[in-house]
Length: 291
Ligand code: SF4
Ligand code: SF4
Image (cartoon, rainbow, N blue to C red; front, side, top):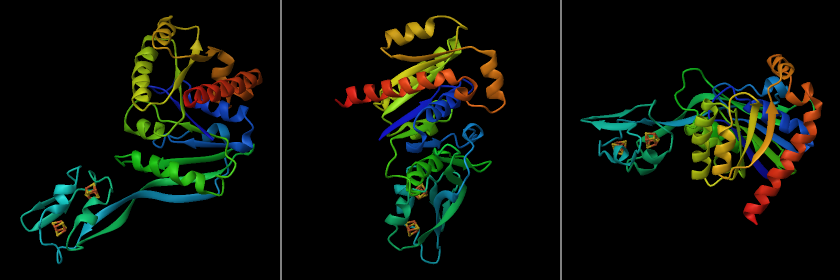
């Protein structure tokens, strides 16, 4: 099984266009697609899954029984996030800071802490009309942390009776380079970085390359809207020894089709073969690295 994360340093570069078309171009019954852009998932608009499984998702928040608490302060000492504090004869939990790690519950010598699920969002999964196994997370409005939802989506999605013959997991990350993207990319075999040949595209690509190199993930680049901007992205890729795996020229027909919710490979079926070749190249690059 190969896990490919599709990422971009900023929104609007065509990341979801690439991820969904890659999935559609392959033998779709063996593909698991994860939409990890939990703040604004939109891959379903292109892949049109029928959701069959749902599960609430969140973190376990500590609750302190002050009749048992001796205010020893050990829970506050162990909390890396300053989410629990002992002030005089009060032990206070700050839910917005809590990561649900459970350390305070484990360390409490009086068993004064219990845990309750704080629902932060929803996981959904189901097949698409062409048989792609699709799963996504949706974060509730106002929640401060996407990472726990992404982490649980990655664990939960393959458990829906789908694990046995998955050949490739294609993961659509959220835009940017912050913690949700790091969590999404963690464990991937390859990062497909989608950019555009503009100064903004170059700036965000540089940041994204730092992230995946810190994580030790091999990467390649897709230049979307090729033909606009300048050659600086090409020059950077050469310097950084990053392979440019595909170019998608700016095309008015494609832009209009995508705005109507059509996948790139449906608007332009001549892209099916290049996406298949892209997958083969990624597999070869991963094997070379493992090799
Ligand atoms: S570790 Fe337990 S007993 Fe000590 S302050 Fe925290 S909740 Fe109270
Ligand atoms: S669960 Fe973890 S993050 Fe939350 S208060 Fe306890 S130790 Fe801190």
